[in-house]
Image 1: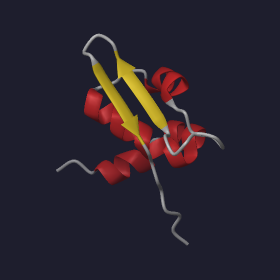
Image 2 (image 1 turned 90 degrees about the vertical axis):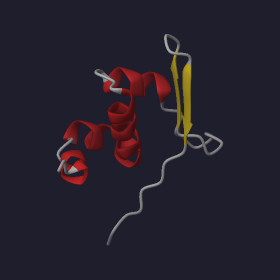
Image 3 (image 1 turned 180 degrees about the vertical axis):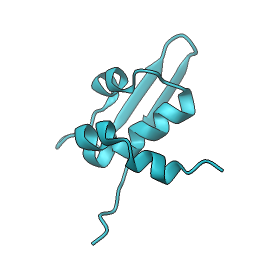
Length: 77
């Protein structure tokens, strides 16, 4: 059985670069088999102080797919 939680925790590239959005990027990469998630993140992440509660807009023109997502990660004390 594949352990997604341990695999995600080992993805320091995503966690260090995208913080609260790292799990969102991990899930997007897994679901849509994206090789270069770093490039996708630079074009798709919209998170910021005026993001209107939308953290990601991903468009794959080849497949006609659009993903609009809001992420939340609870900090465990």
